[in-house]
Length: 337
Image 1 (spheres, helix red, strand yellow):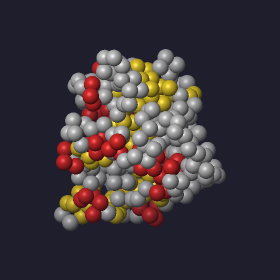
Image 2 (cartoon, one colour):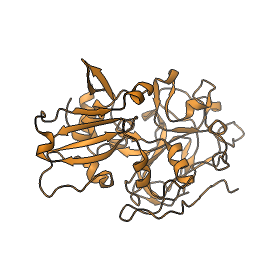
Image 3 (tube, one colour):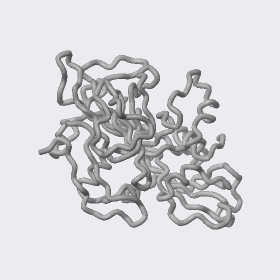
Image 4 (cartoon, one colour):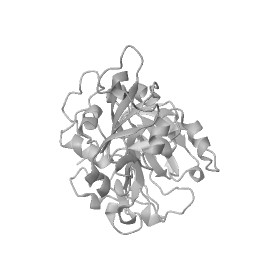
């Protein structure tokens, strides 16, 4: 089997919502394309348990969230360093290149955006040993294009050779106006990555995305978002139309009104991805305080189970915005909570 495994989903994309989805596994590791379990290709995070290289609350007893998946190498050079090439998972445009590993916990990393699809998701490729010279911001690349070489680059810690891997993400950028929020946090270090700082990125489960495509449950990126299940549903009274929804109009549940928007109802996945947006009229937000979120519904069982994310908390018998949802709302709407 060709290790650059490409399988066309064979389903037409929804009209108006981007092209048919074609995916390329981002490394030469053939285990996923061969249908082997994740333990055959995930790189553990030091515990010895391959699941710790997966997406979600897979670390620290389920309390630490991991935004992507970590894929281990299949080849090494004479010094024991990984020699695997890293491939673009979809055709896209290079949006960010960090060639200085000391400036991010991602180490050397590349971000592609995929405007041929709706929503125009990003993919991120981190801990690279080398970035290919043709990978330049603004360059259009085909799916399967070589982005660089797998490695173990990172800032703030040394990754041992035997844990080298590709960290891979798929998701959405919360705002194009990230810097003001970052400055208000007073982190004490500069933001060298613009809107492609990891704090501004909301990742999907890459393995679930690939599996949905391989099983032909989805034929477009839009199809995948329709599979997501809401864990928190909230309303916000505001006249603001976030640049998020202007960049990702495919997430609207109905068209924007001709007149002003009075507010929003937003559905969030368990990991905090704001995947469904409904514009509200004045009657829908009657009695609500402006720019104070009101939680309408919570899947309490899922919220209790997924301990690595706290989107909603019970206070005096009512649901309130949790610590992991608060910065998401601040970034989306440019407000302070």
